[in-house]
Image 1 (cartoon, rainbow, N blue to C red):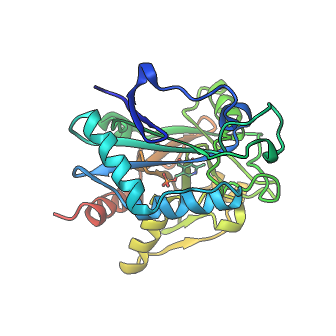
Image 2: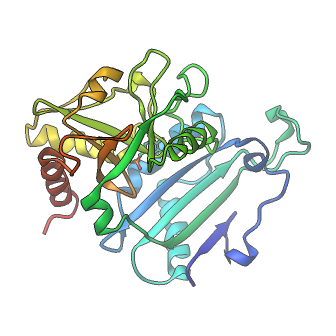
Length: 288
Ligand SMILES: Cc1ncc(COP(=O)(O)O)c(C=O)c1O
């Protein structure tokens, strides 16, 4: 059973996994989500994902009725139905089923819809880690914090999708987006980091980014190990002159960007700092 769902408490296979056509997530992207992975067969930091999910939901004033314990229990029941092995778990919470296709939340007086999706975990291949991704600095700007704050992990990913399409038009694997002040933000589904003169930098929250769980863990690790890793605004020029660039996300951990706008980054291979941080991170999250 490769993919299993739980829809408002009921575990069903994909062939029966439906939400109503008047669901506001479907109509307007009016919802939030999280992606959690397992490591060693256990949910990896569910409490951090729960905290971000409830914060995202609060910002959109969508009530999330489950405690962390209830969420974990529901995920485990769905995982059991999905079989053994490492899992990808997606939690989708929408404002619920509206009475009319009208954006006013007053038309959705009932409970939110909660969907869990569990499928086997797929990570980038060894070749992808060794080769790295190519990136394109796109013209599409990341959503402004005062418009749709990227810190809210909403179900509306059109900004990210448009940026990714633009990058793919240039033959790149992934997009990098600036904000309206010309500073680096993130990639469509990853945080971004650069290495310059031995210092590792990632954009601060004020740049307008999702506060990635992996980003937070890597910053924690760097602080504990006293590494030269900093949150710092990164201009377009600094990005273009970076010695190394890499991405972080739940589904990638640390993955190098080895080409930017068609030019090699450094010598076009994952750099020494990126490789060192990836090794340390692996040890940090999966100690022997
Ligand atoms: C826009 C965006 N930024 C960054 C990330 C990385 O976050 P995390 O490390 O929590 O997976 C994601 C993950 O989906 C994302 O969608």
